[in-house]
Image (cartoon, rainbow, N blue to C red; front, side):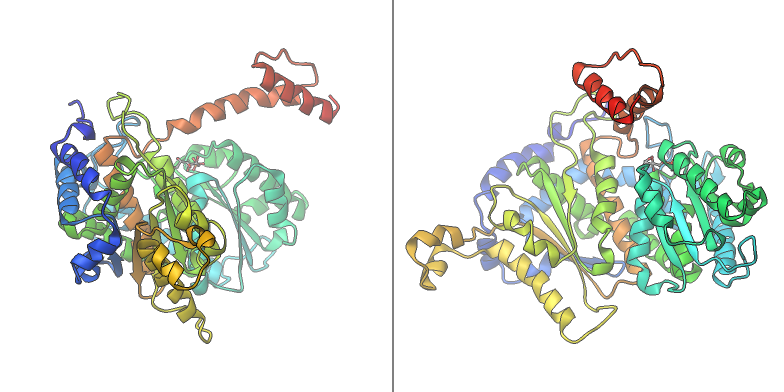
Length: 544
Ligand code: G6Q
């Protein structure tokens, strides 16, 4: 069936004139007209409280956005995903990250087979392994305790593990060191190992395909570095290398015993895999119980997304608001601003989740879209961003919707720090929404010439996500919130949020250029004049 472009849907058509009216309305007036707005335009689920009242919407906007979700088949889309249908059409794959956190005993079918028992079998195997390493029952080849763990992976096999390790550091075993090597840049590997003892170091080679150029290059370097410490004794590999992959054949070929391999499945996309065996480093750091608590948080948000009406559904609302700003206000970006130091890698993680998923220019049937799709996500933890790029958000010429993420309690309470931190969250959202008029600035005695510089227009939208404290469960809920918001956007835009063909071309061209940089004999260069000249310069510097 040919998908309907969103712009042909009745709700979209109704949103266009509606936008023309609401774009002139200030948040000051929306709040003045309804004293209950700040409590009414909120929703709560899975331990997260979403205040979306500071968005440029009224009840009619929300009604039309929910109608758009319904007309776009969001309900049946959700059901299809949870039923294991092959909604990743270009790769003909099911999209079942929700099965990774389904409770034991649940049933989710892929090609007629219940995958939940396999998921739990892998989780149990991971837990057993992690307990053995953490208790030092699993020792290095020479009998030394494993003190260092290095995850080698890239993209989805790196960003989730790094983010989750940082996010759950408070819960982690501090007697162990965790590092992450992703970049093929040799410095990444060199710096990760420079102060480590190979006799105490375990490598997790994380790669769904086990063929990724960067990861396999780093894995081979890791193997050589490790073996050097053991005087080349290959028997050491079994105690110092484990793999996380779907490709048992390649794992065995690399020399890792498949008994030390943790599997996952075709239906887990890389950027949706941090809660699969790809999270082995997370489980090693924070322990199996905390990992399971994180999965519970994910699952609670999954259930909320699956069952809650859209007007109270956190991921649906956030996804719809993103569509609203992207396609009606013409916003190009979304800022994600976690006021929690442990979430410092969350924006980087979200950049992949959101931009690799929804950075698409064709609909499911290959027709080009003539509306905007995925916005650019960026962010930094607060309050640091306030002393940097917030200037543009407050007074620049672009509209940048913001997601503020905050927790009621600090994990490391010290004096007044947390009150000051949270005061800044509330102050920023207030300043963005309400601004400061020229009259107010003048009344403070500001000279006339300076008034325009000190005036704030306001009317800059934001969401505030507030949770109790950053627990493993809260992290799971938060990640699932964004996963499903991305899904909601993809359904509205009728794109495949689960493929990533855009990363292929560069990979292929790099494979062609590698020998041109390395061959001793002068290669016949057939690129454009810029690429040819760059290659020649590089070869000259190498002295070949
Ligand atoms: C994510 C992408 C991509 C992938 C990496 C690593 O959705 O598919 O980022 O995770 O390319 O792939 P491997 O795990 O196969 O090494």
